[in-house]
Length: 204
Ligand SMILES: Nc1ncnc2c1ncn2[C@@H]1O[C@H](COP(=O)(O)OP(=O)(O)OP(=O)(O)O)[C@@H](O)[C@H]1O
Image (tube, rainbow, N blue to C red; front, top):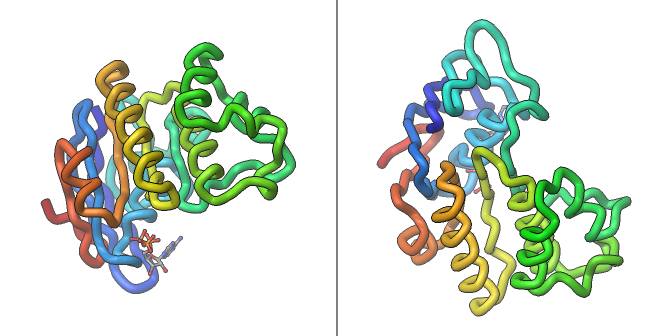
């Protein structure tokens, strides 16, 4: 269970987010610049809230007493710009933090990136990078998964495939997932709960 109750002053408005997420898929929609990525970054520990609390399964990520370092939060985070390590091949990117090789191989096969293993990020397409980043985030078998527009660069068929895999893994792992998207169709298909971010405020 993820519990978030935070405030963070951003450049143009204050981010205020309060929600509890059980093992569900929460979809976050909202205009560009409304604060969606900033919320994920607070949960990940990349930026620090000004006040409040963040807890995952009773473990405190952030409180007035301090902040748990990013690497100890054990979350999977697919960044909007994929953030693959540029100096590592696709294969090396994926095994970084990998838990189970069999699962990882299966995901690589299903998302059709097996043949890219020896390539570097600058040698593959945007959609391919996105699939590599998705497999990398899943391969860590995280306790919380956060995906910032993970399917935007995929064609319709590949996107449907990726949706299917995410839903299957979610059924299997039963972890909270936060997914940011600009697609209404995707939000309705994947979200157990849908929140809209408006100028830093969460509206259900
Ligand atoms: N570290 C920071 N400190 C203060 N303000 C920030 C910080 N990072 C981002 N912002 C500001 O917060 C606002 C929200 O940005 P954010 O990236 O969270 O929006 P978003 O909803 O994810 O947008 P998009 O859909 O375009 O990705 C922007 O005005 C941005 O300039």
